[in-house]
Image (cartoon, rainbow, N blue to C red; front, side, top):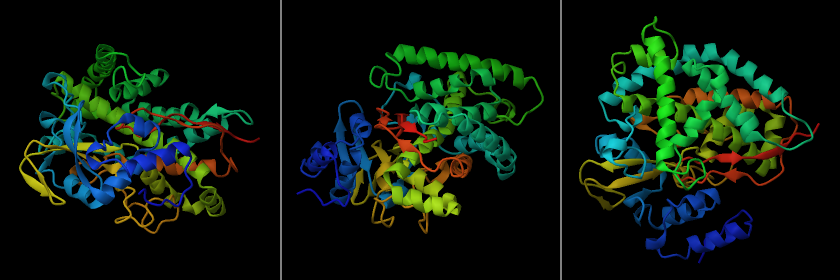
Length: 423
């Protein structure tokens, strides 16, 4: 029988929940992108956390893999990189096993020591001193974008706010030509697209061609900066650091896309997800308006609630066990961060959106261990400033239509969120 739920469900959610708790376990496959686009995957995650938290799936597209759905088991995988590898030679961080000559090499898909050396190259961009220097720029741009929004008419929050603010930030971090900054958004979308499925690119050849254009554009910037004095932007850092200045073309493109997607998707989808969450939880919105200081705990709660990247993959380097299951060398595992962030055994009232949690940073959205998101503090700063500037401007942000969610099991986000600001 389906487990009880405290939240009233519409018909789509009710049917999904009934299916999730009645299907035989061997027929549950939480990697189906449709479940994420319909926002019904949470019911299946809840079933797996209860009945089979380390769940072997057989998928025609990805092959067999383990779905890891509980908080503590995800932590065990994420913090033991010597056993569970993210290296591109083992398959990398995504479930699909691309041919070896098509795999992008990036430091998140590397094991130590190379991972550590390349990560250290770009980490100064988000050091505390640099974040302090960026704060004024972020706030000025946020104010300009919010002050330019229309009143009393519907518009798309994703395009007008989330994409615009994150793309401006990316352009600053790369010292990318500002007039061309929307190319960064396109390349981010293409990098995570599934050809012929999500409507972003039609074929694998189109995807490769557009990513080639990205590499060519950045190659020109690289050539300018490698012959100039070292600068404080990401391209200069990569061009002048011993660990990255001699990268292969695929490694260069891989690290570029890692920085673009990492700087775009997490913040962009949290900016949209926060608006939707507060709309759906009016008591929390009222609490925030009554006490704007709660922005500090609101931000990590939004990031937990949204979980902008739903999973990361690892590959076992040796036979081991996890939650009593025998994991064989070469097996791949999906750490479902989205599920771990709803695990009631680890996070109190995990299924509720609560903006004044006692431990708001107890979430998995940034990962753990050596691959913990390098830009997590920058993402939090951007969101903190956004909500600090929203509160004195907008007594309410009305969501006036259903959000359009991304058809992806990796990027957990929105392509559209129609809103209205009463004048």
